[in-house]
Image 1 (spheres, helix red, strand yellow):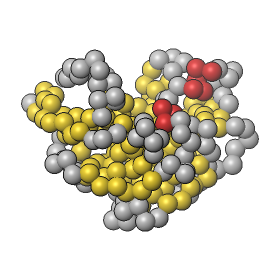
Image 2: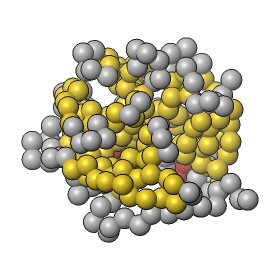
Image 3: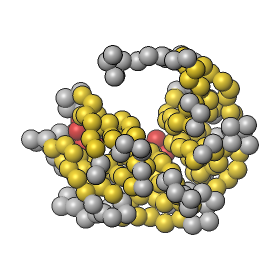
Length: 233
């Protein structure tokens, strides 16, 4: 079987505009939809995707991640421009974690990704275009700090952050190179390199997915339109 061949699909309404998605324990997926201000909960049963229920919130949901059965989503109030992280339960309870308005520029379509570490003292990590750092937030919002990327020779464009085992990995562009970095140990590895710098390679998000158990990453090469598999050691 072709590993990239879709085995199931779910149609969404035209006005829902899915933005981000994350896995939830129990073969479920949460999808943020704008501008319908909705988080759609989808389950996978017998290789079929089923829309279980919708969670409606009072602002635009963008990046989303999960920790155990709780969802953490970056939301934006389009009237006040307030950007925040909220914890959302699968039953629809919504709690404010922290306000990000003073930390990030009010250019929210350029939020790239967020993930959670899986230790007992878990953190949320957020990447954002035009920044050389990653935002780290505790699950209760009590602590918030920025983590700078390892020093590189040129300007970088941060793409995605992902939790792989005990590692928090960040994918970013630097000129002709696509680099994967462990933000804690500052270990870096060049995963792709182009012969010449190209805007398509620089500005297209490249991280497809990651398996935290096998430490395997699927990274899309936009220049060759192929997905490549990498093992983080």
